[in-house]
Image: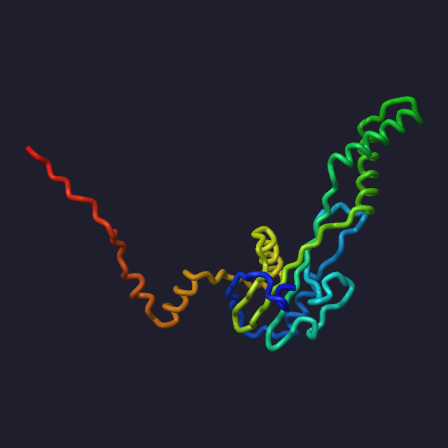
Length: 210
């Protein structure tokens, strides 16, 4: 848990909000709560919010006490991905087709092949555990959001669900953005706009000899 252990660097974002309360946050994330992948389903990925420190208990309701600590919101985001080995699936389908030929004394047509493949996929889904990834974030409701994540793809997934949940768009707070924000707040943006680019090293003058 990076938030408690401090074992992972975070990325800072700015979230502009006015009157969002912890109760509002708890109510909104219930609409985008994590739902596990169904063994007989067709989706290979599921993402959503889970209770902090109870990330693997997807049935637990997310209360205010699960996310509000020391005047800050702690969000926990879970992504489950199911990957079926293609070579294993191919081998199982081949074995089932051989059994079909042995039992019916004829080759399976396209419809039967599709049914056999779907049956093998469902069988594998019941035996293979999905890969779970977690993202934690600390949200100061005054405007700062710290996301503990290194993966760019996972970060984009988090931001997408965050925006859908709260209808707020986080803006990255890197060094350039912070400098711009500082000067803007101090009404010195006009001074920055007036800066002109000038090269440090001028090229030598060319002298034409007649």
